[in-house]
Length: 216
Image (cartoon, rainbow, N blue to C red; front, side):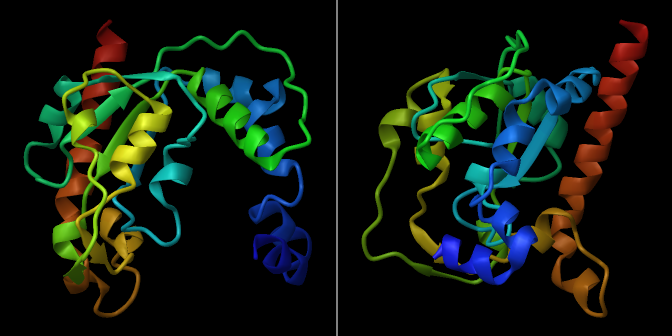
């Protein structure tokens, strides 16, 4: 399906649907990674539990089923978001990047895994957003729970992918507008006002981190 869509949308479609090597190159080549390293902190925030049709958790947090990069909980960051119940999990990855080009493989799945590991090696703060209660939903007849992962402290990328990819409800995946409290069109401010605390808390986090870096 992705190949067909990519073909109909020409060059841009090929890039978006990964039928070209552009996304892989941007996630693995020093030309693109070194500018990211110039930042004191790299933060990725994404809707989890299948609530975002446009940018799902696996894409937004570059999670891969074959990536074993350890992710460490960051409870002190979660406290920053105390004014909203939609953020209860934050994890960090250690900065281990050493530079150098990564060869392109012949498998798309293998490339995804390499790209995921490559991005993780830059060191990230990953923020998981849960907007399920703000969206229309129905109970799922059969749900796969990841209760065994709840007991673990440090989780791999693959484990977080499994944990955040399951839900006990089928949710309308319109969380993309909620997470940014979109007010761009008439009616949006009221429809997505519940996302406002997310953005307010995120702004608070950025100010706090900037202050720490200046005085640290």
